[in-house]
Image (cartoon, rainbow, N blue to C red; front, side, top):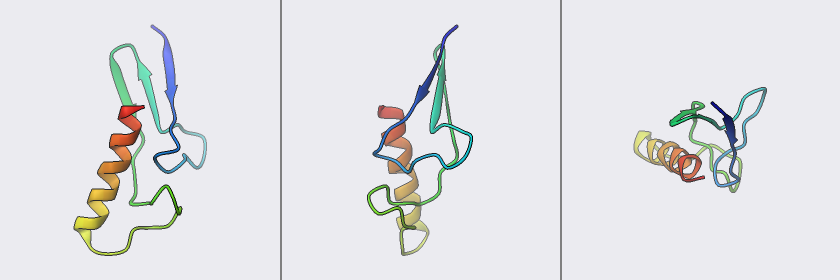
Length: 65
């Protein structure tokens, strides 16, 4: 079973010794996300709704890659 590292610039870069995601066979394991805007590298302002939306957009970009 081959391991594929998944990385995209459409989500915040992994900081430290981990990857945004790893595909192993038909499984994909993603790293946890915080509400960082990948364009600015800054936390999204606002409440839980805006921050949750950003986290889900980051995960969407990683899974699309």
